[in-house]
Image 1 (tube, one colour):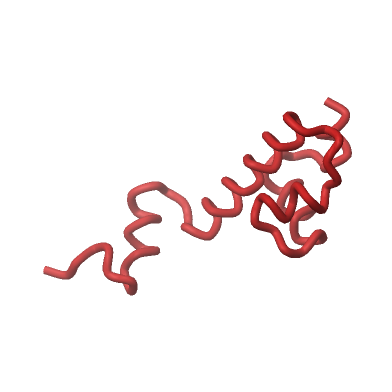
Image 2 (image 1 turned 90 degrees about the vertical axis):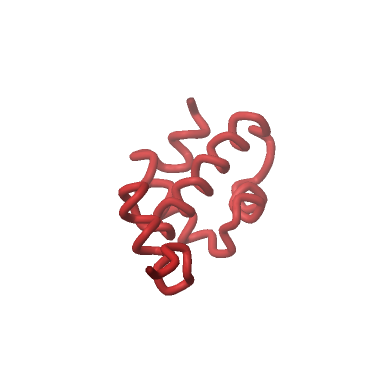
Length: 79
């Protein structure tokens, strides 16, 4: 019997158990963390929040933020 957590099977097992790709889950969690930081630290620049949340590319951060929240970073900051 193969170990389901063996590196080769990790993503398949993750997807089967949680219903989404590991990479998708990880980006979603990073976006959620960024949202929380925006609420707790409204004076922080977006670049700082993105970096702390694990995004090294600002453009990628903006794209993923919109993808997972349905709103832009600017819209979120106005809330």
